[in-house]
Length: 86
Image (tube, rainbow, N blue to C red; front, side):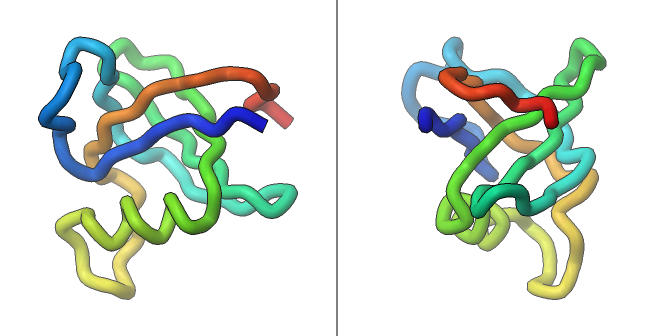
């Protein structure tokens, strides 16, 4: 399975390859993390990442440990190779 990419901070490399969005939800499905992001254009996108990547990008957000990442701004790249809608 190809996984998508997500960063809590603006990437320092190839900035033109990354999209910006706001986290709408974070869920776990089939042993992976599904992060629903609302891009600046408006239509939501599901990103599939490993649980380790989820833990990493959430830890880098400017929120307290017990706070939800919903509403936080992230940078992402959709890689495909899987269906992102249930």
